[in-house]
Length: 303
Image (cartoon, rainbow, N blue to C red; front, side, top):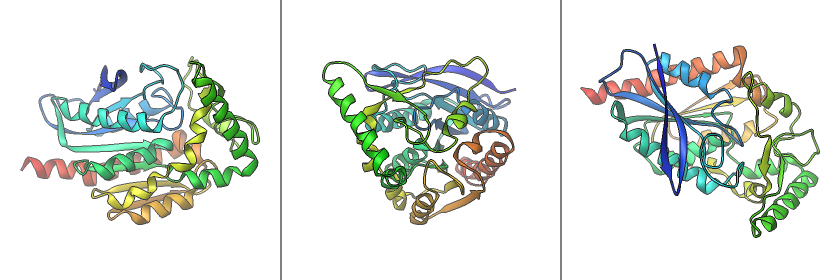
């Protein structure tokens, strides 16, 4: 039986809420740990528990956290994405996981999806003590996302971002929908984005479907895939061939920069990987990767 405990850790002046999973029969032993956080405007409840339970059943400890300003974590205003703060949250999460009594601090894997799939590359590029990285359908190039959105949509979002930035000087927020139809002023407008996000909602879940628009001013300048060449640890990149939200081509380009990389392609769209048989296939590939690199590393360090 696996166990899940509500925990929290400090990041800056705020607190990040998290779930800590421990596999059964592992008490008193030092085990590898997977650290997880969601993508653009996501939080733990949107299917991360399904991944964490799968990893825990396979024998891994798992720490799943919400960024500041989202979910169970503190931070005001709500639903505000700050790339700088989210990277700080990742560093705080890694530090916290390494402090946990039964976690092997030398056998930490960073798991990121979509927007956080880029974050984990950025973090591991500077923290060479990280043992492995999983980047699922990763956002790795802000330029590619902006170009795929088109000039008209980029201008719409930039205007919304400037409006929100102006509002911020008065302590206010200008929000836009997290997902919308193609051509609307929303964060995610690729065909099927609305249905894709809603497919992740658990029964009875009441979402906050807004996002502070200021993030649109920074996304084009954030390309974490450029840091992949600095990774010293094994990297798994999972690419959705039909991805209409992030660029598969950019993901492969980032993967090509890494020294020890495994790329797996799935003939699906961005949100298909989170549910059903596609999820089962993807998570099985992730566990195989963990068993090969993380568990083996942990066993070698104990000898």
